[in-house]
Length: 123
Image 1 (cartoon, rainbow, N blue to C red):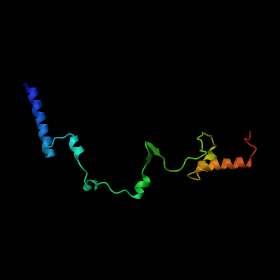
Image 2 (cartoon, rainbow, N blue to C red):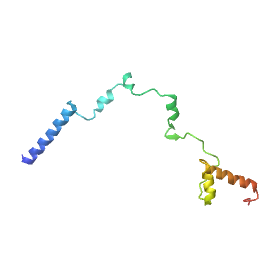
Image 3 (tube, rainbow, N blue to C red):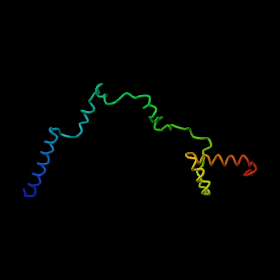
Image 4 (cartoon, rainbow, N blue to C red):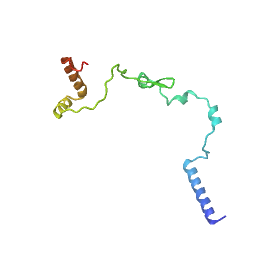
């Protein structure tokens, strides 16, 4: 055996000894599927799994088969469409100054204008 090989084996043996010392056991790590399959769960095995509360059920995702059932607001029959529009700075600043929902208020103002001008856009 060469000097290099002996040194390598000694080094690996020292690492394994240190690992056993820090583990403080003689366990062999790996999977024992037969043992896992034979295991029967006992009531104390479930102590870390709390009973579900109504709040947990409310937040849970619902599936029918593999299909996720969406929660929340139902889809609109006439959904709004995203567009790009150029507005003058004073119009944009005034609507934005009204806070959250400013785009909805612009939409309402445009609908109000259309109601006042029924002849516009009619064929």
